[in-house]
Image 1: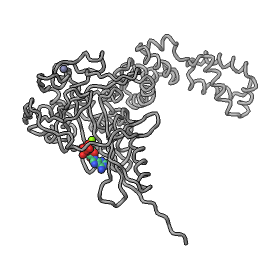
Image 2 (image 1 turned 180 degrees about the vertical axis):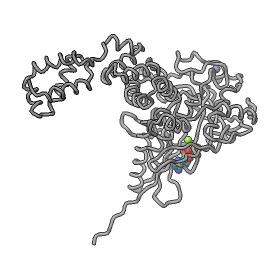
Image 3 (image 1 turned 90 degrees about the vertical axis):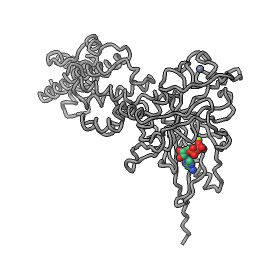
Length: 486
Ligand code: ADP
Ligand code: MG
Ligand code: ZN
């Protein structure tokens, strides 16, 4: 009997470091404006350019937003939090160090829950801390490199998951990020715009043979700017590491980049170790004293969080769990849904339409829901017209597209396009002319060839330019068929 070949199986571990730029008016340690983009190097001053002699002053709102996020993530808040210098050289870091937090982060020991194939899973969070963003390097078509310091000193929050890692697949890594983004946008701490880099994610990934107690060497992927890239990047890295180990090779501890076009991770640099950053307390800033009263008032100001909103939507509106997930993906989605459902009184139709037509158009136009010209009032108006039979579902799509495009009220668009024809007399006349034009098809239909029914309905729709009420057309056709061919 041939020997049975058993291939070693592997367990995957994934930890996440997420950076979120905070929604403050000004930067972390100076009064320069905190906003995306802008003419390069127009939002800078001696502090955020790191000029000698300048002194930082901590932004109180930034500290408050990090406390807010840490509380929403069930962290304990440190009564004293310190700023530290993380030293390294890079052209986008003009001071030669980044002000960050090392051993006294603002928040620690938190968690959030995700849904997995095997049921709900708690992902533990080790720390939530505050630091400053770097400038941005740009590689110009001329071959030169340039640097824009507008982003230098923007308040940045870092959220790191606990070790040993709770996540074990690309699906879970994505689910974690989706949930984290929902929480951060819901509490108004981050705009969550991954494509603009205001929310950035770095997964740490390792594999080890099933049963082994020691964790495998990890790699870290940088520059993932969408949920899709996170999922693909993690999946690719897990596969790459298992293949290496199966060939008897070793995984090197390194930082890898993500090549979206080729769908693979590529070596960026061999990982620094912590000592190389020579952390030490920032001498220009006093430690932060975070008293209980401040924490209590921030906690009291937290809105309903996505998990609670999700349960409430299922309970209050009868939407499915999957629908509720999507409807609570950001606070703006929840607000849109509740307003539209409240106005039109049909929550199921609202959920359906938002997940179908609205999501489709937003995706195609690459817009966020709060940038959409057709607001919840417009959707409610549209759905009410469908429900009362004023317009067909088919017409509603066209009306909605126009409303989405222009922001015009659906009722006005529908009135211009003409309302649905349900009148039996008018439809009967159209039917007569279609039968006269297609006598063979009509004979076949009356002889029992049911497939011809769709064709006849199609002809009537065509003649009425989509305005015929399809239910009424079907009813009329069947009535005539019962009467036999004429
Ligand atoms: P670094 O200093 O290299 O950034 P950290 O110790 O801060 O590493 O960990 C960063 C993240 O990586 C954390 O979420 C942690 O849980 C995770 N992590 C650490 N070791 C491993 C490993 N062997 N496999 C997977 N994830 C890991
Ligand atoms: Mg790291
Ligand atoms: Zn500045």
